[in-house]
Image (tube, rainbow, N blue to C red; front, side, top):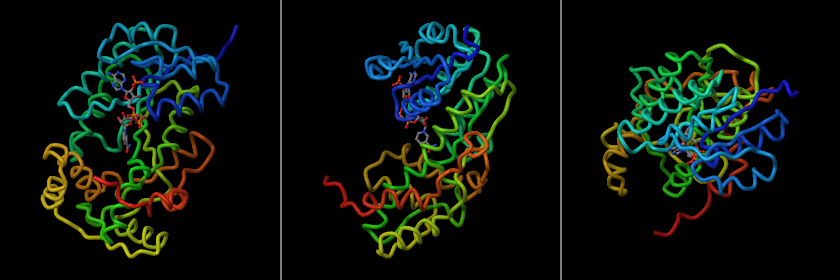
Amino acid sequence: MSTQPTLLVTGASGHFGRRVLELLLEAKVGTIIGATRTPDKLADFAQRGVIVRQASFDEPDTLLKAATGADRMLIISTDAVGISGERIRQHVAAVKAAEAAGVKHVVYTSIPNPGPNSPIILAADHYATEQALEASSMGYTALRNNIYTDLQIGSLNRAVQMGQLFSAAGDGKTAYVTREDCARAAAAALASSFEGRRAIDITGPEALSQADLAAIATRLTGKQVTYVPLDVESLIQGMIGAGLPRPVAEVYASFDTGMAQGTLAHVSNAVEELTGTKPMSVEDFLIAHKEALLAPAPAH
Ligand SMILES: NC(=O)c1ccc[n+]([C@@H]2O[C@H](COP(=O)([O-])OP(=O)(O)OC[C@H]3O[C@@H](n4cnc5c(N)ncnc54)[C@H](OP(=O)(O)O)[C@@H]3O)[C@@H](O)[C@H]2O)c1
């Protein structure tokens, strides 16, 4: 009989979930369940031995069924960020279903410093989910993922085109981390034998300011990029002018406020401690995606 635990990944058909499934298969950790709203999207993983089950956080019964027999479960935060309270309801339902199904340990993708004082609007969802885990009888690992380095490609591409990088982050620094390193950390935490309760900042190897990002973009592309600090309202107005609805612009701008306040500045060794390999630096990631930095602006 296998002594390896059965591991469940929710939201498994997204970028993050698929990568975690891949890493778990490579690590040969035992029985893997992938839960998704659309099992067809995981047909390739089913062929490779992953047990694929249909589940949605909006239908807790499906999640309860999907989690049956799982010892450890990765709850990947959903992308339902536009509807007020939706994500909290989804995540709390997922935590309750995990507990009811007899899951012993939950790994959850959170955000640094998610407490009530965070100016980052989306942090409230993560805080509520961490509180639900704390109130449960299960062990948990809250992986407080910093901002993905991957997301900087789009904004730096625009900055290279314009020669200016606009932000309301002031001199605040951010410990950007690649999605790949977050996925590696999540796979390792899920497959680990840790049974207690912990919250860990998942970060890149250093914290960088917007001026640092502008300097890296200048160095890599040979095109001068100057950092232009803005106040928050000017940033919001700029995004509205570019076509974003005000509530969406406010969500994005709240990340800048968080950066300005140092909410995302802490650098940890957690990626290396969990995976045995150091996280990738922003500069190395951007070197690997240099062509995307220089790509022409998409036609409208
Ligand atoms: N740290 C950062 O900078 C950063 C940036 C972007 C996003 N994130 C967070 O990281 C998460 C994963 O990122 P990603 O790139 O993999 O996003 P993605 O490819 O858009 O995937 C979104 C995921 O949400 C799941 N989901 C949506 N509604 C669901 C529901 N009702 N029940 C269960 N699962 C549901 C989807 O699962 P199925 O379709 O398989 O059911 C899918 O895996 C995002 O959802 C977001 O919370 C973090």
